[in-house]
Length: 337
Ligand code: SD4
Image 1 (cartoon, protein in one colour):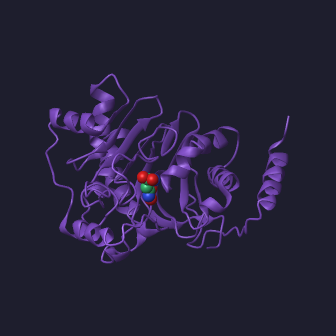
Image 2: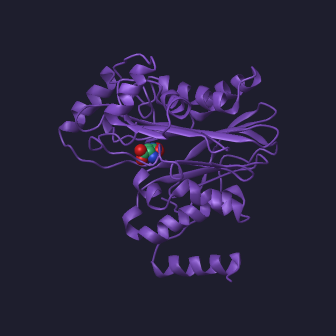
Image 3: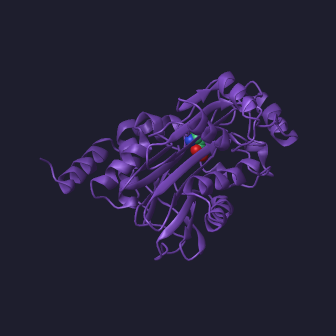
C-alpha cells in the first residue's frame, strides 16, 4: 500500500511531467488564528456573513440557523453581484441562483436555477425540511419557493442589467479570476462569478455548512455549477469536518471537490493540506486547461482548525474564532499568477 509521502512524491512527478510552472505561495495576510474557529466563509464579504452567523448562534440558534443567517447577508447585499439579489444574469438576462445547506447528520437540501427569489439558501433549507427530496431545480424550485411563501423579487438590478447589456456587445464568455473581491463599481469587466461558502461548528464539534451563488455571470441558461451539488461545492462529515469551494464550478464538479477535501482530512491531512491536495489534483488532471482559472477550497475540521488553498493568488476567506475575533486571510496558491 502506498504511503501518503510516496503518493505526494508521485503527484509531484506527475505535475513535473505536465510541464506546469508550480510556484507555491504562502499565506500573505498574517498567521492563522490560534483559537479554534467557529465559522468560516469564502471571500472578503465572508466577514460580514460570519458576524451575522455567530450572532445567530449566540442568540441560541442552531448551526443550520447560523449558516442560513450568514448566507442571507451575502444574498441580500446589492453590492455583491455574484450572490442572490443583484447577481449578474445569464446570457438571456435571467438571474438564476444555486444554493445548498447541510449538516453533519446527513440532512441536506438544495436548489439550482432558482429565479425571482432572493434567499436561495432558505429555499434550500425548506427543500431539506419540507420535501422528501434533496434538490429542486428551475421552474420546480421557483414554484416551490412560491408555495412556501418566499416573496417574488426581481433580482436583476439596474447595475446588473447594465453590465449584461454591455456584455451583449461582445458576448464573450471568459470568467475572470478573483472578481469576487473587486469593487462592484467596475462592472465593465463583469464576467463575474462568486459564491459564498460557509462552514460552522459548535463547541461539541458538530458542524453544518452552506453555499449560495448566482453562479458564473453570463452563463448559458440552465447551467448549474458546483455550489448546490453536495460533495462538489459543499460537504460536511460528522467527526471529520467540512469543506466548500469557490471559483470555476466546472473544475470543482469534475473532481467532486469538497468531498475530496473532506476525504483528505479523513485520511489524516490537515485542512490546508487537504485543500492543497484537491487543488493539485485539478492542476494535474487539467493541465493547460486551467491556466488563468481560479478554484479555491476552504476547510474546517471538527476541532476548528482551518485551511484554504487555491490555484491562483487572490482567494480570501474570513475566519471567526470562538472568541469572536474575525479576520480575513489570503489563501496560499499553487501558481504565482
Ligand atoms: C459556480 N462556483 O457557479 C460557482 C461560482 C463561484 O466564485 O464560486 N465563484 O461555478
